[in-house]
Length: 145
Image 1 (tube, rainbow, N blue to C red):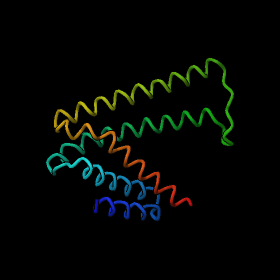
Image 2 (cartoon, rainbow, N blue to C red):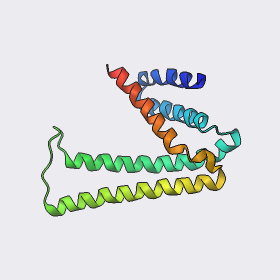
Image 3 (cartoon, rainbow, N blue to C red):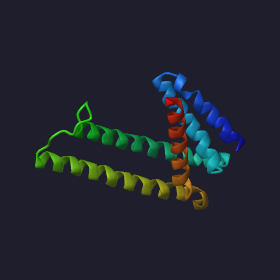
Image 4 (cartoon, rainbow, N blue to C red):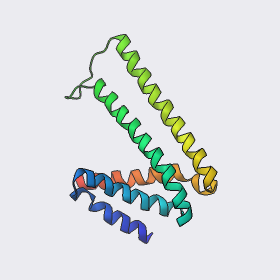
């Protein structure tokens, strides 16, 4: 709990840095948070992070594709763009491809991790990731007010 408070304190200072540094700070907070919440030993962390970093990079690519798709669907004013049926079907197919790749990536992550680490710890990874994202979002909302 004490480390969680330290992590949240560090998170508060994140927005005062440049954009690249901002992402690096969040990444380092995520490393600390996940390592602590999953109770990874140093030897487990050595096995976990190379696998997770590859996964995280690929997921980031999928999130960028999804953002790009969203930008295609909506104009800069936030209004819906108009598409032909063919264009709409193409966008839907791309979205479905993103969903399928996300599912496959998440499945392979869990398989890869449980080959090298205790499943009893890895089964909590989705919730821990969600918890970290929720804390980031809450901190963002506090700063906006």
